[in-house]
Length: 103
Image (cartoon, rainbow, N blue to C red; front, side):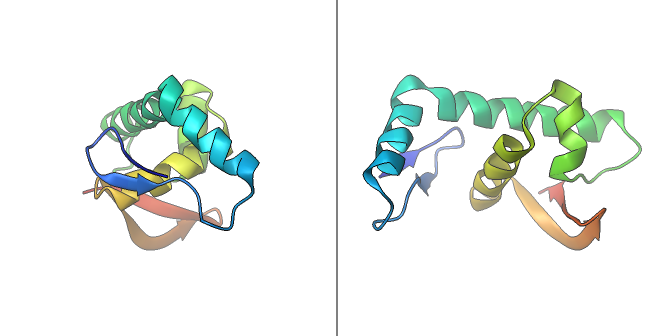
């Protein structure tokens, strides 16, 4: 299933060999609007973090406490935001976590 998301670019939500339960979960995420809501929540958290901290870059681990988000949810949405060209990897790591920045 390929969907248009918050920033208007297509995103593949599962692989063709994934189990049916993964496909059903992906379709439910889209139909219910949770995917767009989660992307928006993480995007707003990123912007808030960058504007209110000394750092102009971030890790998934650093974003979690700002809105009490689940680490794995944040990590998945960072990948999606990266695929959409909203954020990019800096090439650095901080505390064993990949460092990102807004493009």
